[in-house]
Length: 296
Image 1 (cartoon, rainbow, N blue to C red):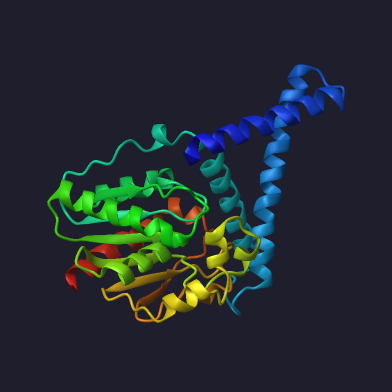
Image 2: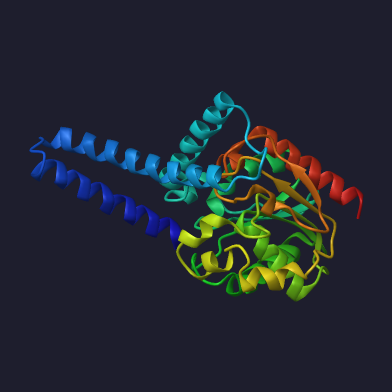
């Protein structure tokens, strides 16, 4: 599973940095350990910076806020990146216990994005539950296979959630790639089990960054890929809201997040990962769930 694989990768990486400090820099053990941690944080900062370079290069005209506000967004995204990939996903079970499917209120199924797992929803799940929702999650595995191969996993989870909650339908909420998998599910299985669709920063028309990603799903998220061209002719078939992040650092050009046939709404400036923890975004999602349910 992804949490274990990611934890193992982090441990191996730290061990390599530690021994490089001992052997090449001649540091003692405490200094080598501190150097390993600092090196890890610098490497992650560089990884994060690369996404922003792409975000700027391929940005939709007029998307970016002013300089100081952009810097705040970038700093927030870096800390969200560290939190997600160093602490949350590797220790997922500590952050996100099993789903509490009591069937009270509207039922929402959260579908994570590329290279992530259900753990990323730990805070948004709390906020949705506080608003009276029953919230289900799913981890899509293996993480770098074709998106089409992930759809049966989503189908099985939808059926299980409806069965456990007694609900005939639920709301699908997908972040990034998760929104594409939700759309593919609707194209294959229809909307008998789905009352509404919400996408968060989903590359509905692809993203330039996907060219450098790992796996078949990254190939499918490239701008003008055959997978996306096929999906373009498929309308949601249910009430839908597509949230567009105007300064997104993973999905660019940012207008590619728009979804024809959906109500397209701009988010406040926030990073692609940081939006999962942002209180303003959570409030918009809660309002969207209520609004879509009221207009079925």
